[in-house]
Length: 212
Image (cartoon, rainbow, N blue to C red; front, side, top):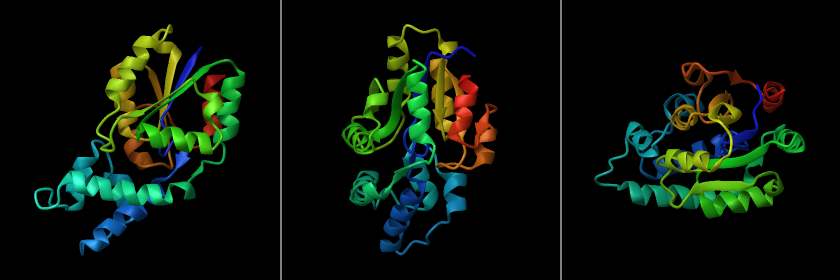
């Protein structure tokens, strides 16, 4: 397949941070005398918009508003954000894609300022023409940003590959017309990813193989 442009998700695709999200959320729940959840539950139930996941966890959003919980979560996550690392093959993969002359961007539900900071600190900024995050912390959807980016490209939809780790990434790819592959080991289980009907890869090196 003659892909000319790669759209990468960030959290759980390039950045290994699902473990931190689980720890932070369990901390929030512990402070509310709620039962913690396992990594298996997290990967089975987490999704977008995250407000729906909060409801599944049992938060009473009338008594404990989503806005308050979101700020508490992001504050705790950001205090520990530098503990997160890239997945092992990420640096070599994005460098190889760049060397091949393909365009690359990051399309994320992460807040824009923090996204740019983390990408820079981890030494990846030079490989991406754009870092496209949200202008808020609520992680509702990145579909609108995806549509705008796709409209800005000189490529046909079949020349664009979106790489993510969640069913939402698949939904965004469908909405913008891009091809999609999903990586296991992020924020959702392999079973959920396979239900999308697109290739589910076990490593970033397999992305390179797909690109040819």
